[in-house]
Image (cartoon, rainbow, N blue to C red):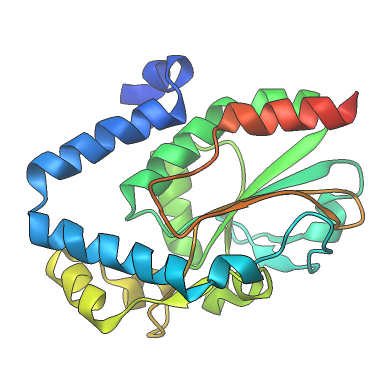
Length: 231
């Protein structure tokens, strides 16, 4: 199965909603991925929802932790510096191996100019190594920093981290998703996808977190939210 690069899909990404892009990818998965494997991934999502972890993630009104992480070029970025003049949009994602993460990153890439007009910065955080983040930023021509959260240290403070169950690890190994290599540790931990908007004092203004990796907020909704609070 081939996931289009930015050059191949940028025009469509500008004219279609993220929901439509995801619907297309879901249809490809339904067509090409065996039903028993689909069922395993669905089981993990169900178990995460039933665990109540979503009730423990940071919500609007909370204070997000300050952090410093290396971007895809190896430069250290501090949240305090990013928030000095701009609000901050943070997108937690699983990694470059996830087609839904790729789709989301490309869709977010389109709204970077709008975010800049609204005095907001964008960063995306994953547990993958700096090298993997560099490969992703370069391949998809991303115009915002990809930050490497080694050991999911920051994601854990947001309440987003879970361990991939053993029965799903086996599936990932079979399709060559080598998380210990991609993330640089053998914890088999990932963050659930989440999007946050932080104010200058690290206050959480907006939060969206869902164990279902195929359900993420529309980039346009983030722009609309920032437009409303900027008025």
